[in-house]
Amino acid sequence: MYRVYFFAIVLLCIIAVTASHLHAQPTRTVAVNLQPLAVIPAGNLVHILCGRVDANFDGVQDAGDAAASWVTVDATTYQTVRTLNFLWQEGIGFPSRPAFNANTNRLYLSQNGRIRAFDALTQAVVRDTVVRIDTLAQRAFSTSGSVSALSVDAASNRLYITLRGSATSAVVELDIATSRIVTTYPAHIFAQQTAPYQTANGRKGIAIMNEGNFNSMNATVFLSKSPTESTVLNVGGTANHLLKQGDSLFVTMNSSHEVHIVDLNTERIVRTIPTGTTGFDGPRESALQGTTLYVTTYAGDVRRFNIATGREFTPRLNPQGKPEAVAVVGSIVWVTNAYKSASYDYANTVAVFNPTTLAVNALNERPLAAELRVFPNPVTEQAQVTVRLEDRLNTASVRMTLVNALGVTVAELVSQQNTQQADETMLRAEFSPAALGLSSGQYFVRVQAGSRVQAIPVHIIR
Image (cartoon, rainbow, N blue to C red):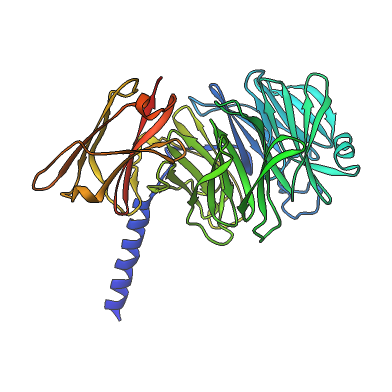
């Protein structure tokens, strides 16, 4: 019997040690108010929006409840600069989807029946009523509606208001200066978020993410050029978060447990990344840092993926709670914990990670290449690629490709010369951006041997 206990204890210790290796702990933890839901970088400040806590769900502020709040934190010292506690009826929504205009330093919130504008530096109200929501709903639906998200196009000073109606949804484009409705775009089932875009190739429109019905596979993304012209993408179950980066959209799917990468130029899903989550512990939101996509999950971790290959990196990040929002501030990753670990008790912490201290090996695999180099980088005319593989591999089994920022192959790189020694394989290749007809931008050299993949970013300047 004692031997059984001994082996059980040893097994538990092994599991604990293994788990600690698979999850990186935060560099630091920042205490804010209860239920932080949104994180907005703004220069040397980080704005944390915290949701309203109604512990007994009675709609009244009782003991133990907390109104929504706004905490501004210094990004360098991690100290709280100021806090604004809203009135009980002035919520911020869940999930929280405010709009921030970095050009004017204005934060826009939907609160108590109107859109409000705040000075992000002082947290002062600069316009208490940009527009009333019932006016928008009457125009869009001829009935009532609620705001699920706000987004802003800084160049045109337009505010996009995502409305969820009783039977349908719509997006209202508003001129901020005059509070006049410019255009109304039809949406689909439970419109969740909107992102205006203009690509490097001149394509312009708004992306409308529609959540769809719960536990159904009818979520969609509309790429709308006008109220009557839209490309509809079927994306799966429960669309939860929309991230626009460059000419790409990253659509996080809570029920179908994946992130879709959409090329706004071709209006196609060019890569789908499974997050590996299950059940109600699905992915929540995402942020991009270079080629690494960070995805928060209610499994209690943040998962990292290479957008060029779709492979997951290890270790996963342990924010010590159920994470909701994620943002990259400079080179540092900030993660809000909406709830405590393994529960739905409200949390009040933001986890901060320094990615430069973390390993980026593909999950459960050692790196493929001991050396992967492109010279010169950035590339203007001609580039040389050098790959020294960890193992002595048959060169016919190794594939070298040049891919764009969405992971789409734009060229096969043929090895011009290779050498094999006892314990390694050396490959070399060359490519010319002009000969391949490539435009300026970020690309990747990707090396693959079987299931093992590794990539390095390449900047092309034409």
